[in-house]
Image 1 (cartoon, rainbow, N blue to C red):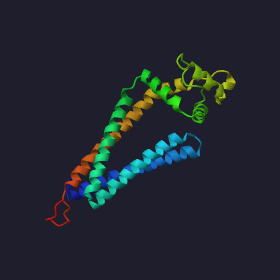
Image 2 (spheres, rainbow, N blue to C red):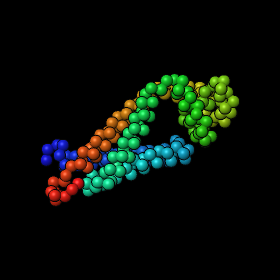
Image 3 (cartoon, helix red, strand yellow):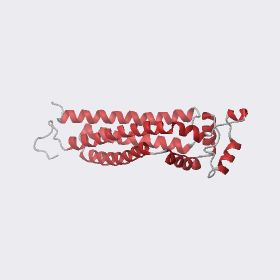
Image 4 (tube, rainbow, N blue to C red):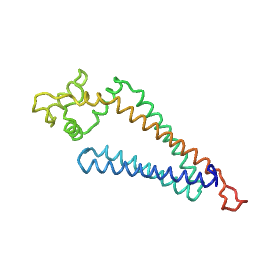
Length: 212
């Protein structure tokens, strides 16, 4: 069967969903590894990563089963959900690539404010820093974080703020994150296109008079 036919579309869609399944399992495994080694203690962060991995794994399984059995309903559900994910991920990826330093500081401040104290101290220990940003708007919170900071740099009498350390690499990290997200968003639109194409093709092994 030439590429572009029923078999080729089926194999391509199955392969794409196998990749999605591996990515989903990787996310779940990384979250469990981070929790097991104590790198991240926040149950919200761990739960969020596991939820994303489980959702991706579930959608990939639906797509894989739909592709194997040429199931019309499952393929329709798969391509609708995948298109919604594409729109969301494309928007987030473009936002990451377009974010300037002022927006990065605002995002860090809002994120730091909702983190648990245990998560903050974990970050301070890992990065060897204290507090987020030593600014006038966050001075009270910075002093409170400085008192509870467990970083080794306190013994030397001087610590960089965690916000400054993170902002030094934030632009590069956001570019990588946005680039990877943008790449995967195009694989998702490829999955939608393959699902639509495959769903509208007729199985050559089926009854030729059957309506698909």
